[in-house]
Length: 325
Ligand SMILES: Nc1ncnc2c1ncn2[C@@H]1O[C@H](COP(=O)(O)OP(=O)(O)OP(=O)(O)O)[C@@H](O)[C@H]1O
Ligand code: SF4
Ligand SMILES: [Mg+2]
Image (cartoon, rainbow, N blue to C red; front, side, top):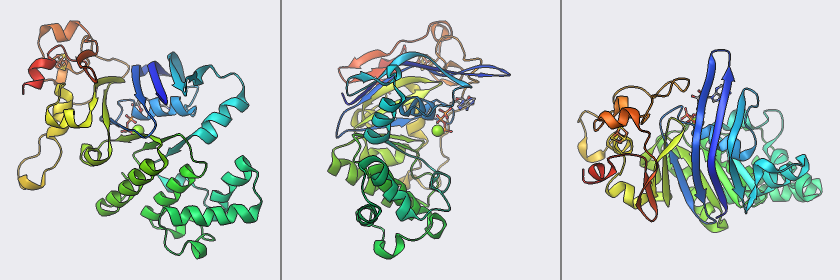
């Protein structure tokens, strides 16, 4: 495994109490593989990613348990700041939803891209500029040679997101984490940017963790899906298994809420109720107040991640029933 997260726990200590944002997450991704991480707002997708990348706000955040094994080494145990920076700066990269706030507004995109090569590869400014143009070509920004001198605000949302992808790719990392990389874009631009990311991931044989709300976009690009609810993985499976038949009622709810072109005009299904307050996660199965299959045992016994098959797990006491539809 390129990256393996094991039993990760993260809490936030605030004036109102302790929010248990990540409660024992385990997932992994191999080189050349795409793992999609899915779940409603507040389920802990980004916090898990921030803990992996070493960019968690601490305080108020606190990692209270677990391991983040990257190429076999536990990143949470790296002592030297320099070692941490070397691994996380060069071997792993992150793409965020909002390029405008991640890019520096007063530095040209060429200089920002070039900086990666100056700092990490010790290149001259001139060579770094050449590399920047190459990268902009690579992510298909038209007229890269001219546009390399422009500033972030002079690019459209889709083009800025391509620049973010170029920044992430610059040092040819082994792993990229993309946190809702297309959410802020128009639907057609979303598809183009997602296709580009998937193509580059294959070409560079990188591991990709793709965090998204949108089950619709992952079908074509992901190998595996991990579904999160209240800071836990509730289902983890190869993408085709999940589309064929979900083994967790929450996954079923997410699938049923995808708009379908062949059912225009039909009322869209929505999972009833709201995600739990992370300061007061319900006992037993955290999903029970919203679950159509819930019964007494669900209110008292927390389901472990049951093995559905070799490559698939579900944290539902009644996964068989769910699987049978
Ligand atoms: N800086 C912070 N301070 C306090 N609590 C935080 C902080 N960041 C995250 N949290 C808590 O962790 C929870 C999970 O946040 P996270 O950003 O991981 O959700 P998410 O699954 O990425 O949601 P979204 O789809 O909206 O991005 C939040 O609901 C919040 O309670
Ligand atoms: S364990 Fe019970 S409440 Fe939880 S998802 Fe399964 S059936 Fe629903
Ligand atoms: Mg998020």
